[in-house]
Every structure is written in structure tokens, then in C-alpha cells.
Image (cartoon, rainbow, N blue to C red):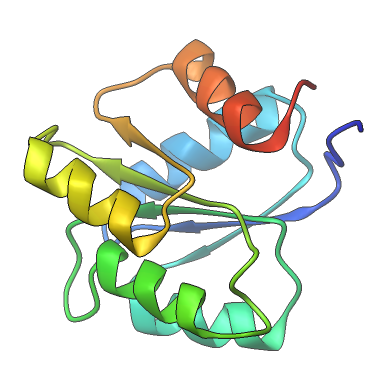
Length: 128
């Protein structure tokens, strides 16, 4: 099944520059509808109010981390099937284990480029 490039994608990061970078990469890859949130709490509100086909979230945010957001998304019957990718600067084994246990679909270690992002997206969403 083809990936719907018109789906709503939510980019969650407390660092505006990172939101812009990921948003630009997604647009380069053909995604048309990219929204953003500055932390997990704002993201959860947007997810519950809208219809998103993918979440790309930073791990380290205050007050609600990306991992905590992931757990809340997975615990919500309406949202639990939404593909979720965590972005982190650390590739510690315990982080990967915690993310997998919480139900992450994939994760990306910073820094990364459009090619890396596309590979991660294809692993989660399928080819596009």
C-alpha cells in the first residue's frame, strides 16, 4: 500500500531549530502536512484533537519527555496505532530497550540527514 504523503505528521521538539529541520526534511521527502508541538503535553492535545498518521518526537523534553508522550499515546485507544518515531542524541542500550518496551516503531539518532530519515520512515510506513 502506498504511503499517503498527505497524512498529517506531528513533529514534537522543544528546540525550534530541530522542528524546522525535521519539517523541511519531511517536505523534501514529499510530505505535505507537517504540524509541530513544543513538548509532549502540547503534542498530546493536538493528537487527541486531530488526525495524525505519524509522530516524530524528540526524546529529551520538559515537562513531558518523548518517552512519556509515547507511553501516553500507546495507552490511548484512539491513538495507540499511530506510528511513532523517537529522535535522540543518545544511543544508549537502556534507552533503546525502554523505547521498544513502550511501543516505539523506530528511533533516529542525531545527527541525521534526509536519507536516514527516509529509511526510518520507510521501515515504519512502507515504501514511498
